Image (tube, rainbow, N blue to C red; front, side, top):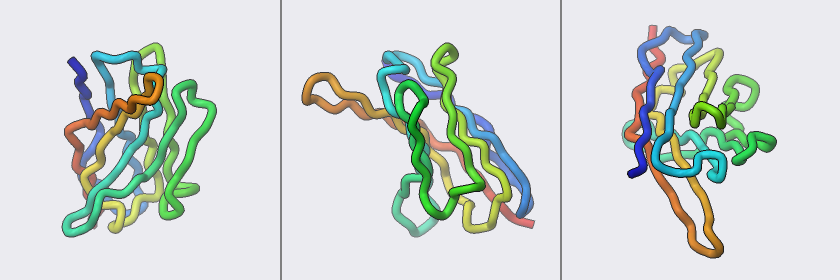
Length: 120
């Protein structure tokens, strides 16, 4: 059974930092690309950052480039999102996401989300 344990969210002042973690269970973690998405109140869910299965390729939304860093530890089946220089507009629920393929079939799993609030 696929499960995620997300942690690291919370309340932080503008300019501060947080590190999100998402521990995954129940699938071959290293075979899946991992991503972080976020959804702010009244807005659509958006892709924040993604990383390939081996960790050699990363992509970021323009709004977080230079401030956020995605990484993964395939021994611990965990993906991280280091968030620096946080802004109020980063306030959202952050979700980890896993996507894998077997032949032509796509498999996708979502975490339960963790709240990040940036406010003074």
